[in-house]
View (cartoon, rainbow, N blue to C red):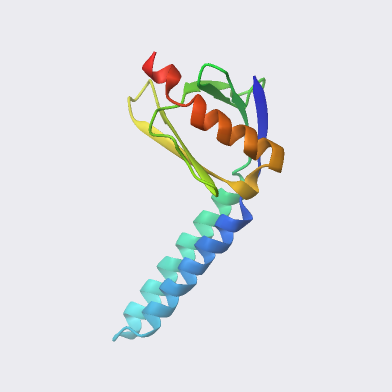
Length: 138
């Protein structure tokens, strides 16, 4: 099993902050002052919620050769899952998709290139392209 360390993404923080700033500016040009205040407050609260969740976003991911993976391998909350074929790999990000066996709902996690080391990023991309979905199909 290959274990990679995932850190919070600074690139995602910049992107989400920019989108929230644009949202606040869009409310500046609304007709009513109450709408501007409500929209700006909503955008600020949404951004604050994201930042609080972003700070806790790091984890360890164990990649298994059969297409399965583990959140927090050898940790207190070890959870073994199987990557789904819908997992998407690009040069900048990997959308890791799995199905929660208890609720039967599909879940996804965005992992961006700046969240892992260069060597781990390469290993993670190769694993996702070649292994993801194999365990779910078989």
